Length: 330
Image (tube, rainbow, N blue to C red):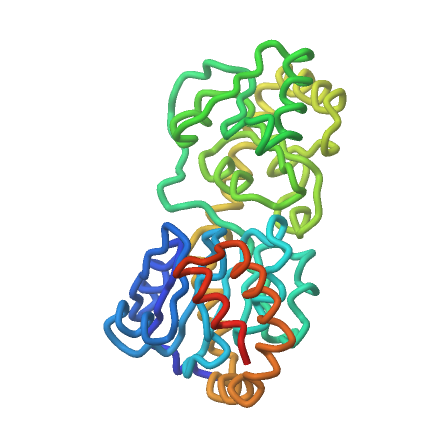
């Protein structure tokens, strides 16, 4: 079925919006850096035209769209952080389609949405994540925020690892300039998610050590061929793996190169755009919109009401709080 979707209002994070434009879609990006409650009129005004698709690309913010159950065009939620926000599956029921990055969470979104309305769309690196030739200054590096309050598991695990591997470097900043300086790159999935760091490290040509998790990681990359896995939270097993690999520099280089080839072959933004375009092309957009509009009141009462009431209470007597309270009403 040829997609009738031509104009996309891409709300929130950029991700692969430009790759969609490269496929011939007209894409207008509507930025969202702080909490907002956008209605249909806001979307049309900021886009500058009436879109065929309003897509919210996850910014890990409170609900960005209100009245979405009554939007007259096709709607989609590109959901990244379902491992953090328990309300996401309920909110997603107000959309026509959901693109979920965590495969093991797909069933959570199949409440009102049918199996054909929910697509597994794993993370992908930005196009500027590429191998860089530089000296290897460190044996092992972790790049990311480490805080005992906001990332307690990561904080504790890295402290434990430093006892075993004094040469472990922990850095913050642009990973694209830091990953290439290490023989091995460490990933920690604090909440068990298949995170962007997996794809970013491989795209940078790094030899990655990442926890063994679900969410389709083993189907995308093979342990010992594209990357190396360790039991999540097992500092002793990780230490043994690091010592073994550092003694085999040729293996490190071979696996790093294979991981990079795997990303280039199937896990760039262009691949995600092609998957979304194909997904859209297989939908009866008019039928989905019509069905949602017919069920709008039930969708609001059954799925969206509690979400909006929660955020109305969270923001209290403010413009945003009042917007959420209005959205929750019959």
